[in-house]
Image (cartoon, rainbow, N blue to C red; front, top):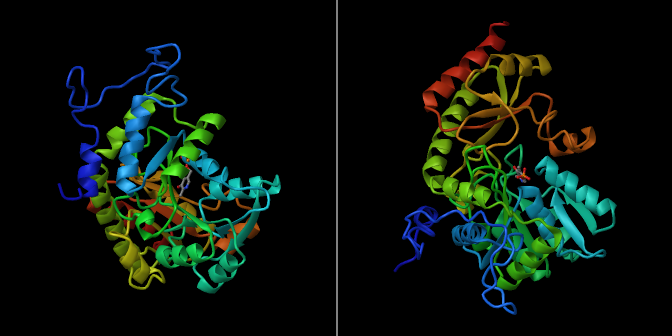
Length: 388
Ligand SMILES: *Cc1c(COP(=O)(O)O)cnc(C)c1O
C-alpha cells in the first residue's frame, strides 16, 4: 500500500485490532498491573507506569503522524520537555529562543540555574545569531515555530542542516500546528514535542504530552527515563481520550484555520487594531518560510490594539463567544492576555525582549461558525472606536 496520508493515519491507527471481541474501537485497559505468564518472564506489559496497551497505541499513532521511529507519551507537555532535558549533561549547552511558551522558558531557566546544563537565549529569527550559537557546539537547540504568542517562524530545515554540521541535536515544539500542518522530523529535527493538551486532544478535557524521536535508540532511552522519573502518562483513560481526540484532528484543523483566517481579515481592516501576527499574512516576516515548511497557517493568531490596557479591557469585557482563558487548540474559541496570563512566568524584562506588549491579545480560533466569531469580535472592537 502507498504511504498513507496523516488524516488516514489519525483515523485508522489501531482500529479493529482487538483479537478477542473484534471491537472496532480499541478497548480501554484500566488495570494498573498485568500478570506474568511465567514468574521469570513478564509479558509485553507488567506495570502501567512502564506501559499499558492504551499508552502504546497512542505512542504508535503519534510516531506515525510525525513520521518518527518511536514516541514516548507523558502526562503533560512540560513532562515531555523535562524528558528531553535528560539527554543533557552539566557541561552541555542548550540554545533556546527568547520567545517560547512561558512554562518552557521557566523550566529551562530553572534547570539551568540548578546546574543541569548551560543556557543560551537568542533571537532565532536572526540567522546570524543561530549560526553564532551553533558554531559554539551546543548539545541541543530548541525550536518553537510558530512561537507563542507572536507566531514568529524559523526555518527548521536550515537550522537542522547547520545543527547537524556542528554535532547539535534539534528538538522542535510542534504544539501550535500539530503534525497535520508541520512535521519537523521530515525537515531534519531529532525530536518533536507536543503538549497533547492542545490540538492533539483538542477538546480541553485532558492533559498530555509526547516526545517523538527520529532515532529508535533515542526513543528507547527516553522511554527508560520516563519510567525512571515517573513522567509517563500512566492513566489509560487519559490516553484513550487523547486518541479519541486525534481521530478528528484533521477535520478540526481545517475549521480552526478557516476561522483564524476570517478573524485575521477582520483584525487587519479594523481601526482599533495596531498590528496583527499571523503567518498566513503576506506581510508576516516568516510568511515565505511558513509556506515552505507548513501545510497550513494554523488556528492561532495574536494582535496588538492601539491605545493601552483600557482598550484591552474593553475587548475582554465585551466578547461573548471567546472565553478568557489560557491554553489553546480546543473546539471552543479562547482569548488571552499573555502579559498576565500565559507568559506571566517571564519577568518584565524577558517579556519585553520577547516582544510581549501591553496591548497584545492572543486568540485560539475554535470551530464555531466563523461568521459568528467575526461578528462577536467586531462588536467588541467597535466599542473601543465608539468610546464605550
Ligand atoms: C501548553 C504548552 C506547553 C506545555 O504543555 P502542558 O501540557 O501544559 O504541560 C508547551 N509548549 C507549548 C507551545 C504549549 O502551548
